[in-house]
Length: 384
Image (cartoon, rainbow, N blue to C red; front, side, top):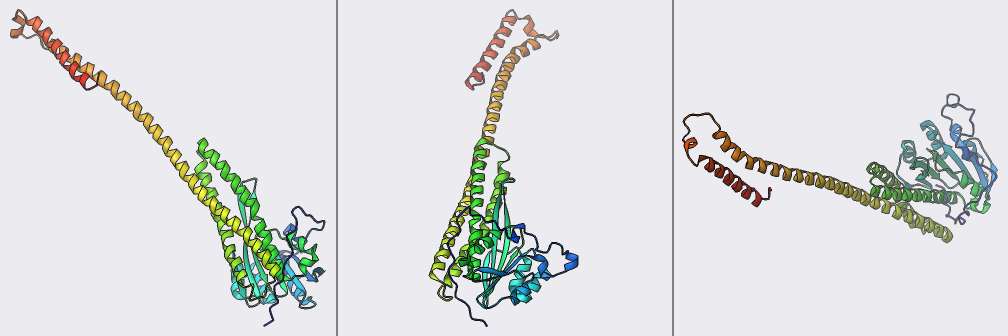
């Protein structure tokens, strides 16, 4: 087994806004051999290569067309090969694994894809899975990518299964900083990790803006808010799955500082990346709690609106009942004299009361007394 080289420090981050005239082939995210079709190339690894280079003392000395040629072109153990593959198929991954002597379990994970972020060591090779994220302003959604990195003593092999993360800026940065490339494969690994973590900042800002908009819509009574809250919650959970495992990965790297004789300066830069990840994870955790609270508030507001509608309906029903009571009371009061008048209005010959001298007066008194009694009863009950 080859002796592990100590990890050396990387340089500070490139200042924001720095640009370069030279554009890496990786920028187009297309294979370097566009004329080679899948039918013509079969499973040749070079058909998925977007960039391949040999570096020595921080400078590119060769651009081999195949990974095998890159490994064969290494002049000595102090040089490094950096090969970037874009969406390789299974056969191409197996071919690359054979050329770089990669562990079969790591290759299996790379083939299956959709892995959670992790870091595993196989002998003197590190296998790293990263989940990138980018915020799409047009659709106000988060697009997630996946990147696999094999970092050996003299090589870095990157496998991109999606358009992001875009690694051309990392390669451009390092090629324009020879001192950075001189630090070897470990520096490339940490530079990629740093770029992925820095790419989370626009996503955090975009999610924060979406949450602010949702808060306004919730109190504005927008009926489409619950659906948007649910969709945003799913994105936040997915973002949480992409960022939270990084804390464990960085702790694992920190735990190996002494064992692998990591340079003190590199430890500082790694802690800086860890601080960025911690900040992102805390913000995302806060987003998830905030969305849960917003959903609760929205449900409460909807419940209050429903209660208000029920109150109005109940009030209307009570009003109708009061009116119905009044109508029914007066109908009952008027029914008593009507009943008496109807009885004595029947055409029967044998009705002794018709011959009474005071029969008419008695009938009127009975009508009035009945109405008065019913009125008193209904008045005491509040129906009138």
